[in-house]
Amino acid sequence: MVMGFLSLEDFVKLMEAAGEDEKLKDLEEAFEMYNDTEMFGFITPKSLQRMLGRLGESKSMEQCTTMIGHFDLNGDGLLCFDEFRVMMQ
Image 1 (spheres, rainbow, N blue to C red):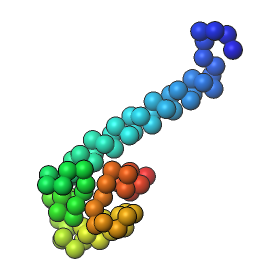
Image 2 (image 1 turned 180 degrees about the horizontal axis):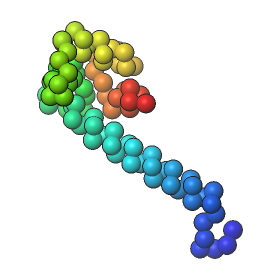
Image 3 (image 1 turned 120 degrees about the horizontal axis):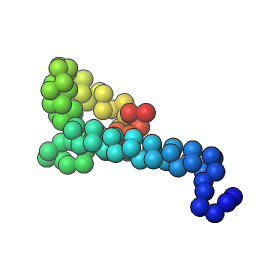
């Protein structure tokens, strides 16, 4: 390797890492939209229902609870960011 230059392989790795950082930032912004105002840092069935309603998707509280249950890895009835990230993959 010549000093001051990147190999093609190193350049590709660098670009992929930058792309992952951008994806993570986009996911964090999306997560914030669904966050519960009373339980900041989590998506609750109530906050999911509210946001889906804003997007024109009318869902019952039971449906929202079921949706969260599919990705609620620790069984607390809420989605934290890590669970949200798994859901969005």
